[in-house]
Amino acid sequence: MRMLFQTLRNLAVCAPALLSVAGLSGEPFASVAPPNVVVILGDDQAWSDYGFMGHPDIKTPHLDRLAKRSLVFERGCVAAPLCRPSLASMVTGLFPFQHGISGNDVDGSNNRAALDAPLREAFHQHPSFVKLLTSGGYLAHQSGKWWEGSFADGGFTHGMTHGDPTRGGRHGDAGLTIGREGMKPVTDFIDGAVADKKPFLLWYAPFLPHTPHNPPARLLEKYSKDGRAGDVAKYYAMCEWFDETCGELFDYLDGKKLTQNTVVLFICDNGWAAASTNAGDPNQKLWKEYAQRSKSSPFENGIRTPIMVSWPGRVKPERSPDLAHAIDLFPTIAAATGLTAPAGLPGINLLDAKARDARKQVFGVTNSTHNMSPGNPDDTLQYLWCVEQEWKLILRFHGKDTSKYRNLHVWDTAPTHLYHLSEDPNEKRDVADQHPEIVSRLKDRIEGWRRSLSAAK
Image (cartoon, rainbow, N blue to C red; front, side, top):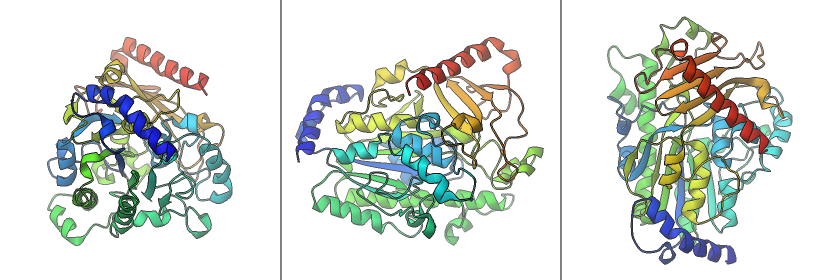
């Protein structure tokens, strides 16, 4: 109770500032209960593949509705273009070389329980927004993707993932049924939190539109047509299926009259593209599961995602041209709930327009997928990148490889790639040779960013 009182007190203190940066006015936050927080995480969906992002074919009416009432960052980025390190960065507000989770596995499928245990133990020493909220009196529910042990290991009070490798625990286990097999665990949790009169955090990370691409027949029929590859049709149908589950969640919050005092944040863990869309690339033969230069790569179809923040009456709905980043979720959630984030987090509060304006670049990292080196993330480093409004620089590294878990980008030997994103958003033309001064300047920015965060460890 004391922590809950402190939360309300903090809300009263920070209310004018939040209202100011959101461009709104209204009653002080002290007059309302602490807001609920819903974090929605898509899984393997390209930044362009939503109705509100202008896709000509994929229908996402429920996320489009969320966009209309949200502060939308069309140019959001993740810390790493792979699910496990990406999610780890979201929850901690740190980059992979800071929290230690740089890939999906230490040695592929070999001896996962023993090899992952010390890595997870070290990871859980870091603060997270989950633990911040539960220490402030929130109930917290995990569903869907979750790599770091059980829901309880992550600081959630409730959840679905058991995390036991002897029972198939790896990246969500029982939690991965959410959405695909209904929403009851989530709605039951909401009911319980309401009955207990507790603010709540909901981590909704359904295994959607991720493979297996097995959408309902009605949706597959809708997207199947002459001239469209089968893997593309299935993926499009999965995107709409994911949207439908989000609609169920929004409708439930509406029905419980919770929408007005619920902060909803939306992001995707990384991009994805069907292998057939890259059939003309001779390097595609190295990997059959999805297109090169999408998931697990530093290109836009790997790292870019829309990011949305909705809080009716508190956050002004608008499209922002500012750069946003997955590491911003932690400080944004802390600010919205009136709690204090740990000092030194590299992200910003996305509700703070001055902080967004002061940001000139965002950064990220790509490591090998299935062969982490615990305690030495740089051992598997493949790329570092920087986005600066119209420009993007990618630096190539050659971290260790294994014959069994091959680096997906062995074909890429160029030390740098430079793209003029405002003219070439799909990164078709590498102009590094034409702009050596920009390459040099952004390389300095990347090196300075790494030095500053390494020194802070």
